[in-house]
Length: 110
View 1 (cartoon, rainbow, N blue to C red):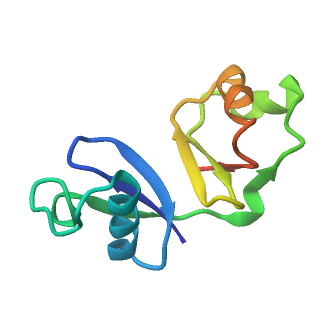
View 2: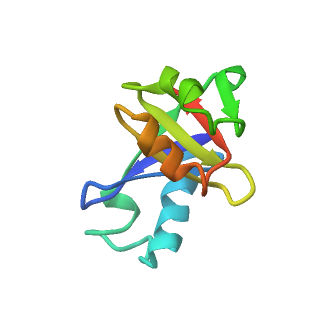
């Protein structure tokens, strides 16, 4: 399952985990923060499950600008299954999507 974790500083990071607690712990490890830290660790974070209809995921044959145009102005998640990383883009444009598609393999429409 994908979770969007909002840190104490307000940044949004998407990770794959089985629970919101595990998602927060994963982000703490990535950011090298102690999970027990009251101000920056797990207690200060919020995690929300991202509900995605996986049949609507579009895989990498997305180099054509006409294909990318269908995502223009929508909220999307760019996801890489191999590394377990993701990026959320609000009100996407074809230029931004094509820039990030070098790093990510899947577009998930929210």
